[in-house]
Image (cartoon, rainbow, N blue to C red; front, side, top):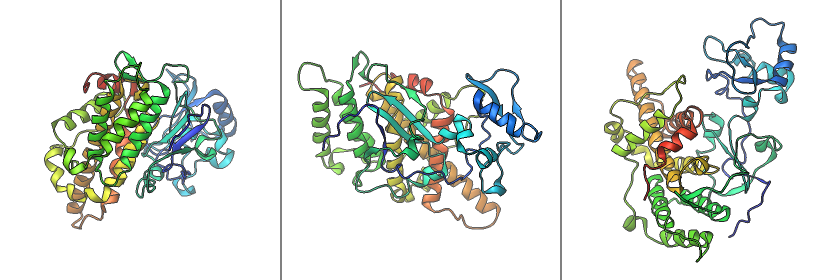
Length: 389
């Protein structure tokens, strides 16, 4: 079924369409220093100015466009956050969501504006967003029109690529918007296939993308070529034509995790790699069948509206970014399990975590790294020439 491109429309994945903030409080307690724009600052200063326990930082260098930065409590929570008030911050509670700083209103949205419209994905660091991955929408992951609750009634902010050229197919060769849109949609469909593990879906996407790099203008359109290559590859039997993959990390995966960590700007916290995470993998791999669907949904979400498409040097860089994402998830699964085992040993009890609870913690940690700590331009440049065909 064809999906016409409709500029100035907003889209999301069907697995994210039902998102509504449940006030889990993760964003309010993450220790982030939230910039406040001038209009919001003036409203908050007038309303809360008489409360010395709710300070703003206004001195010293401030982020671009910010008049102040919200204060942070000793435990890392925002000064306006109160767990005993339903995790609803004082600004939201007393002035309404429209008075929140832009960063608070936007979270957990990850947005790309391009010639196709506005593409809204989510950061799964938000526990509510992560919960949407547990039972992915069947029978397919689809791109659907985004509801106003997700687009904040057309006020979402993100990477604005509307005035730029379409993504690169490979260095020196552009895609066109129709061809890239077809590639993104068919790739997302791969991650919905229950007969493929997350690793196998990535292997298949890498093979298709490598074949597409031979495309030249003058014959079949890129869009037609994309559909042909995906049709041919999808007709193969996974057990015969794809490398078997159970998610077992290898040396390249460890390098990918280090690549992600190296893209974090100075001054931001840098998560540590768990010691010997590859050697620890067999101890947690037994639960992979129970979480693979959620991981495939996660990869589809990281592909949709991907900024690497405009920062990177070709479609291969997007595939490599997804391989980085899978490697980070693997590491975080091991790290989570190590923490649970140590806690169980310390408290002389069995670990209470189900495979999904472990996966949810790992997916949240993965997006903390990839969406909130990593600099996308830096990571894209590191990916640029790493896996060219």
